[in-house]
Amino acid sequence: MSRRLAWVFAIAFLIISIMLFSRIIGYYNSGADGSNLLQTQLLDELDYYPEITWQDNYLFNQYQSVALDLEGRLVEAFFWLNRSFELSKPMKLQDYFDKDQYQKITSLLDYQVGEFEKTHTSFDLVLKHVSLDKSVAVVECINSKTLERITLFPEHPHLFYNTETFTLIMVVIDGKWKVKNWIAEQKTPVTWSKRSGSLSKKLASLEQSRGINYYPAKHPWSLFWDSINVKTLRKDFKLIDSLGFNTIRIFLSEEHFEKGSDLQNLNAFRLLLDIAQETGLQVVPTLFDFPKGFDLKHYTNQLYQLRNIVNIGKSHPALLAWSVKNEPDLDFELHGQEIILQWLKVMIKSIRDLDDRHPITIGWSDRQYLPLLADHIDYFSFHLYKDFSHWEADIESIRSKYNKLIVLEEFGFSTRDGFSNILSKSEKGQYNEINSIITNCQNNNVPFFLWTLHDFEDIPTGIFPNRPWILAKQKHFGLVRTDGSLKKSAELLLVENKKDD
Image (cartoon, rainbow, N blue to C red):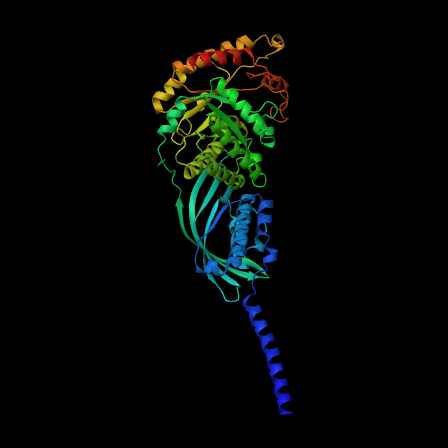
């Protein structure tokens, strides 16, 4: 009987021990409900993609799932904090800050003057403490890059580019991590870094550029990256080489390289560089074609795609240079000149931080803007479709003042310019004009890029909205007709290239 009773007590003790142990395990594993923290999905919806890194330490390795939950919550917290100041009203702040912090923030919103924008473009995080029950954590953010734009008067927006170091105490409230305390430690202006790598070889190659702007015949502008075809690229690049050109300029549209649509097109970009190298051509990519906008809320997505593109291109032998933006001066009227210049400065710096061995330029549509941001770029680029008088003297004046290479990044002549040219009577005239510009470029040591290889049967809607006369003209700038036959300009260039050989 006593042995039986002993077994009963033993089994009961074991059951109670298991139950108690389960309660203890549950207690120490309690904390934020990770299932509610759909970090990646929510950041995608917010169109917010800051660069996030964690320092590798013991706590991070021990509590990686906690760290990732914290990451999602604090990044979202700063998104809504910045959004609240932009709109001058609380936006979802109660979901991310405890009651005391919420009251402090809303009191600041009440006294806000002027327009204010801010975005955090990077977070370098260190996990400093996690409580045993995983309900309290301390996270330090070191040198987070931030952009702040303060506009007291519409004509004078001021941009501040800083690094910020701060510490966050975060607690679990109602199953979610929230900011309990926020200790600001340091704020330092970002320096506009000077180049450390040598550009002499790339600039020497640029000086010898005989280039052409490239789209495939059937897929120009926004259609290009939807329809990359290896056979077409190889055929076109061989023709470009046979015409005596040694460099191509291409356009990377923002919509095709933003988060979500980037992987396939990044692979296509790498493939294009490979085929260019096979053919002996160099490549100048123009970034951010048709951008969504220049507000700070767009910057993290733009910097995300910039990192991916530059990290592919910077080590590729076919890459010659980076052109940050096509004709940004055409955006001055709608967005404001200072807003555009601020955006350009940030993007140029970001490229340079990633790649200090390739030259950077801006493709201005009007040469009067060439001196803008002269200290930030490595060579000047301009386009020439009008005001042909004295352009040589104009650029010589700029070159002598700044001692920088100047490239004619776009010029060309349509073979359809009104009713008198419906039957392509201007093809010989196109060659004469092209030859005249090329001769002047060579006489003035100006590398050039012709617009363009192909005529186009169709141009995507929205490229030249409500301007059918421009649309018709744009279809006929090519050296090759829509049926694949060569225009007079191409035939003569072929002959001249054979003579040079």
